[in-house]
Image (cartoon, rainbow over all chains, first blue to last red; front, side, top):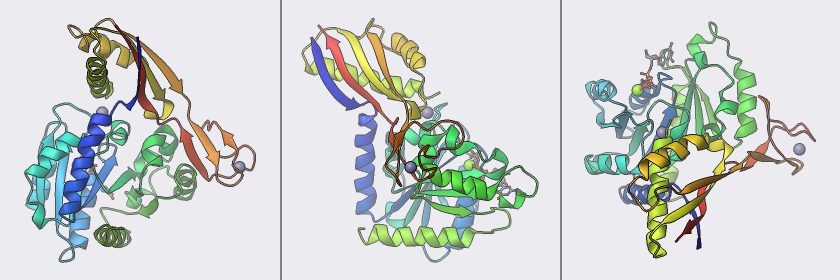
Amino acid sequence: MEVKVLKDILSANNQIAEQNRRLLASKKIMAVNLMSSPGAGKTTLILRTVEALQGRARIGVIEGDVSSSIDAEKLSQAGVTAIQINTGGGCHLDASMVNSALANLLLDDIDILFIENVGNLICPSGFDLGEHLKVVILSTPEGDDKPHKYPMLFANADALVINKTDLLAHVNFDLDGFKSTFKGVNQRAALFAVSGVSGEGIREWAAWIMEKLASVRSGK
Amino acid sequence: MHEMAVTMSLLDLVLKEATRAGASRVVAVNVVLGEMTGIVDHCVQTNFELMSRNTPAEGAVLSFRNVPKQARCRKCAHVFQPTGICWTCPKCQSAELEIIAGNELYVESIEVE
Ligand SMILES: Nc1nc2c(ncn2[C@@H]2O[C@H](COP(=O)(O)OP(=O)(O)OP(=O)(O)O)[C@@H](O)[C@H]2O)c(=O)[nH]1
Ligand SMILES: [Mg+2]
Ligand SMILES: [Zn+2]
Ligand SMILES: [Zn+2]
């Protein structure tokens, strides 16, 4: 007997993501899923954003890592509330991992929740965590051909942050060409070029985050 | 790499649907897999064989319908398959596209008895 199913394979994950979304909404928290290759600058961007938003927004962080807690420690040392999820070898975060992390955070003390996904350009894109924004970070040493190699990640991003612009003089990365190829797969995303070292571009990025927070809060 | 997690979810879904249909055995599973998901069907196949052991889905035959990525030009509405490094509309050269197929990852149907 044939049974029609027509269900998304990740529908169980999507349901938990929906729960997360409702919980976050009830606490008026904006969650941002940060995705990139290993070492592109996720933790650094979080640190720079915390500095830029000092006194304007309270930030919490969920750190997804395969096994270590180095990033969470780095953030805690900087005074940021961070909670570590070890995926135990898993290559992406899923909604239920985020769900357990949310249960261990003081949600009333958070305005913006950054979720640092596992460094990987493939898997994280398929797993909805219940976030409001998907942000992809690409660092200039990785090369400017990535949008077509990992189209799903880039096509679904709400913002793209090009990091390590301080290295542009040393690497083979055509910033303008890259921007136009990226626009080819994603029209709607906001684009930022930043350096986590010099701080270039961080102000624009932080302003965008605040704008998004305001619209999440006003229920738009 | 994350074919493991996907296969686990696939197996859960298949077993749930089989139980709901009152079936005792799953004979076949028809999966629709978009190219953009980056998921490799033979990895899912191998994982499924391992994970389904001692479940009603053991021995089920997995079939994959692979869906290539497809884009629609926002300028002239031409539908085409983007290839290579530069995704531009072959008709009008515009780079403003909308991806309309290739994200699929679902179970179309199962064959049970
Ligand atoms: N030159 C330069 N180096 C940077 C920049 N941003 C980060 N780095 C360095 O790049 C390395 C990786 O940065 P992280 O912020 O740890 O990157 P990550 O994406 O969190 O890395 P994983 O969590 O390991 O995937 C560190 O040595 C940073 O100091 C930048 O803008 N310019
Ligand atoms: Mg990190
Ligand atoms: Zn994965
Ligand atoms: Zn066209």
